[in-house]
Image 1 (tube, rainbow, N blue to C red):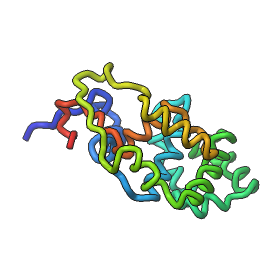
Image 2 (cartoon, helix red, strand yellow; image 1 turned 30 degrees about the vertical axis):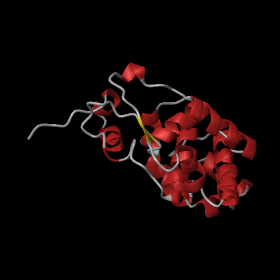
Image 3 (cartoon, rainbow, N blue to C red; image 1 turned 90 degrees about the vertical axis):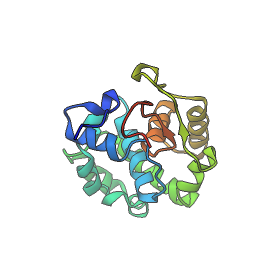
Image 4 (tube, rainbow, N blue to C red; image 1 turned 120 degrees about the horizontal axis):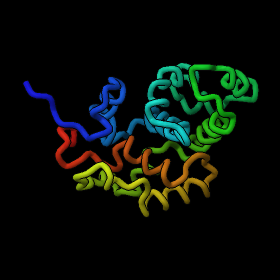
Length: 183
């Protein structure tokens, strides 16, 4: 049995990266918990590699109550201080505080699914990329979503973060046209 071809970044020796590429990235997600999780993890990635964040994902799930937005929204300064001491996550006060702020805003919105997927009329944008170097870091749509989220008060939602988020939750399918994991 032959191995399926993968996008260049997904063909890494890192088993977690391969699994993420093969089973999650570019696949439409409508689960509120997962949408919130990916928003927080993509924000945590700012200035770092995705591999770094992915390797801390289970620690994040434990530290952030499995990304239950209602529980995270209730975090106070004592919980933030506790998280800043947790070596299993990225200990950046701005990123941790952003997770709490974003959780509160997610609850105010009534969730992320309808809000986000309305930008694409509920249908993923499927690209026709042949080469990794042609993959954009942002798009006019990620610019718009970023601006709209910032107006609402969301943090760590710049256009590049939002484009990566859109890929992560399958709003954009940027698997190479020849990738065996492209649906």
